[in-house]
Length: 298
Length: 205
Image (cartoon, rainbow over all chains, first blue to last red):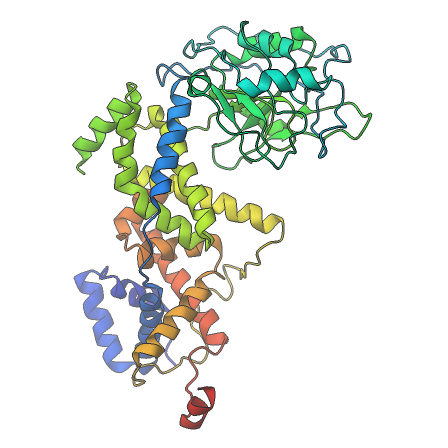
């Protein structure tokens, strides 16, 4: 029996009109003589046609959501070029805030209770370019109340917030009795968004989407005593790298928070990857100061 | 939208006119949504991934060099996000992908080729066949699924696919073939193309 496999790809290409004249002639000639190949052509055609489908248009909310989120980010960067750059900073470090939002909101560990670990802080090498000067300022109305309520704030104490944002602001953070799964009360004033605050809908933690250079923020956080360190988090990565590369272990009760910079994050940092935003509070557990590294264009 | 118009919009966005980005969203959101929809099978996931694609494009727009078209760049982002997404799902065991060894079964014709030529298909039968084919799509390895989504669902040309995936035309051709062959094999093995006798037909109804 003839080995028709050399015609396989041609048969497929024929369905897409992608044969050269020569190939087309050759294939036609063969098809005239070979029932098996005719069957295969028919089979592949059935498959191709079967895939055709009228798909729905995306909902309006897609475009709206995108433009909305972009609007939130806009305040942070004046120019696309002026994105904070870590150069060989490597270690940023370490660890992290102590406040943990437990499910019932009550078992919160004391924020700032312990002296900061001697976390190694690497001096930022030269060229750190700064993003725009919008500093996180205006707190949410609800924040002031909640931070006074329970002794330890679940994510940030007022001092830490001040230290991070350069003063003039009060604590931001989810209300202590907010469960991670709930969002805090709605209605963040627009002014807050303009100044770079944002709420993470899933767990209600509030993030300062900062424009301060990452290094200064990390430094301030450590100096404030409320943070043991800083954790790196990144999304939109260069190919091949996982998109959340902090290694963290959420501490058990009484255990110290200990996060290490993962090898991948280190690699990204050392490559001079650009960072483009930082948060305090984290998406999953409500703790931490994180710096988001922008991915490189593929 | 012409390349010039696009370049203008991109420059405007990079210079700080955020709202101009909306034109790009309007131009490309349909395809991005379709790609993510067919790759994930879920409207919700498609929505999230589509958003993520555009947000990522916005954030990294400053680094877009304009060598490829913006569309290709964008589709590539969407494709990679989908594949990352699917890989993660797989890691947590929420999806089973049938994946044969490249050098073995894939790309070979089914041993028994069904004879489809003389079976007239009613509209209903055509519809059912389509459903089975599309169900089979979900069983393909991600890369194969992607290329068939681009070619046969969205109708991208070979060149557009080559640009989006940054591969050679010849590679596009052979990958499309292997994906189709694999899908054909899955469907044939599952007995989707068996000829039914008249009595079986009536029984089925």
